[in-house]
Length: 129
Image (cartoon, rainbow, N blue to C red; front, side, top):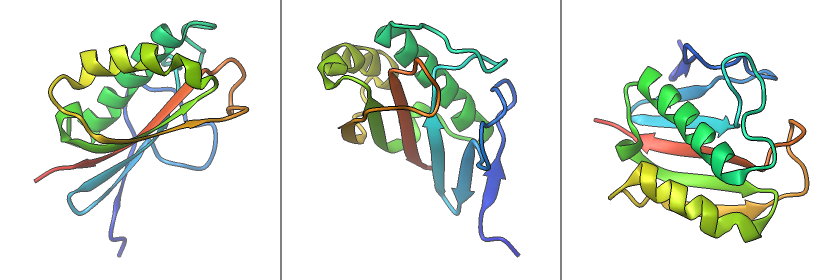
């Protein structure tokens, strides 16, 4: 018997590979890296890291809701950026979404994403009761 539950969030595009939108193991929810994609899998906000960050966090909210959680439950995020110089812009959007919650965070600049045109991807770990 599996010790975890696979989460598929209604309203998101199909995963591009063999993974789940999230996995819940006990009280911990592991959210796969979220991209700036709409429900049909189209990139949102080409060339605009602020628009992409908002879409990423909206997608994350959708995944968390499917797993019975919210952004308030997020304990850790990992942010992948195409240009670390975009960190201040991304940080302002994060403040809008996370409000008083300040999850532990890692930020990494990378050279390429799985989908052409992506400027940001964020994965998260949430803990619920």
